[in-house]
Amino acid sequence: MVATNVANASTPGYVRRSLEVSEKILGGSTAGVQSDGVSRSENQSLTAERRNLTSDLAQADVLSSTWQTISSMIGDTAEGTGLFKSFGDFETALSNLALTPESGADAATVLSSANAIVTEFHDLSQMVVSLRTEADREIGYGRDIVNSALKTIETLNSQLSGMDRTTGAAAALVDERNRVLDTISEYIPVQAVPRNYGMIDVVTPEGVFLVAGTARQLEFNTSSSFGPGQTFENGALSGLSVDGIALTPGSPSYGAVSSGLFGALFTLRDQDLPTFSAQLDTLASDFISRLSDDAIDPTKTPGDPGMFVDSAGTGDPGLAGRIAINAAIDPAQGGATWRLRDGIGAIAQGPTGDSTILDKMLSAVKQVSTISSNGIQGAFSSTEMAAQLASLAGQKRLQNESILSSTTAQYTMIQSAEQSENGVDTDTEMQNLILIEQAYAANARVIEIAGQMINRLMEI
Image (tube, rainbow, N blue to C red; front, side, top):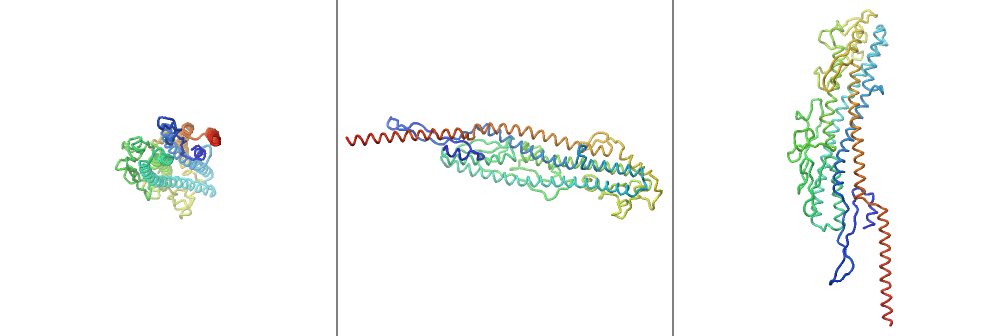
């Protein structure tokens, strides 16, 4: 038993075993000792707390890493990269062109910086779609893993109920069942409820049974596409349920999951990422609107778009993924960059030194406008609004990093306490081996002396 403990000191989920012995009585007299079975040194309250923190840690880790990705894609004022940098570069290029309206090189720079903004919007919009798709796919994987684990617990329950639970084999099965519970707790917080004959039921903290004699199965359907208008609320995306009880985080059901990988993945798919996508659309809509003001360009038809357009003309949602350069100013689309100076609707070039339209465009970009939409509130210029979006993403990243740091510290502390209570102390076990060796040698010597005494008596 001691050797088994030492051999499994680093095995995940292994709980220290000890052999329970008692005095053996025959005919009213002591006849040595007898083995009463194998005991497991398990502190169930510590294990339950560690499982709860496993769920919290899994959720915090996914949310933190995702928002790190989003924040790095947007960029910020400190790094000078991403969307914020693109807006700053565009404003600088437009300012230079307003000073030298005759410069074809400066006009090409404005067009290049405008294309950079479009590219950033498209990349961020596609990133949102990719992250939502990945989250939905991971939920599907998690459903399969949890369902398989629940069936495994049902099988282990059945095996334990039909065997002597004081044996080493039974202890190994209990260890395996605990490892399966640990796997489930990464996706959804669960509690083990002891039942007769060594069996357990598995229930969520909200009171939804996942194993009650037999294993229940989680239900979820993955989606094949993720448009901006596809949400769980409008029925376009699947939720998570078991036997008709909704487990989807954020749903009004009493069984709604609040932690674990499922909690993180649903939060990203249905809340955080759609909100961020809407903020991107708000920024794109504001930018298009600023440069489409009829007061800027008298050559275009009133109400028509200016330098930037919605390629589908449908507006929100998904505008950030459709924003494009007006074909009239883009040589790649049959246009000409001189229309930046002379107007979108200009048929021929005007005076090369006329910067009237360019000055109005620059003023529109720099104009401080009040906005309160999709979590963006305040008065901003276009570049400041891009900085605000970067700031909001940075705040979300820092918030989730703080939660992850706190949860990690708690998990490490409770895991250490659990290991101290339930794990194997190799120093103690090696001391036990020495004591066992000494006891064995002493017993062997007693038997040897007794044999010698009998032999001597026989000789006499």
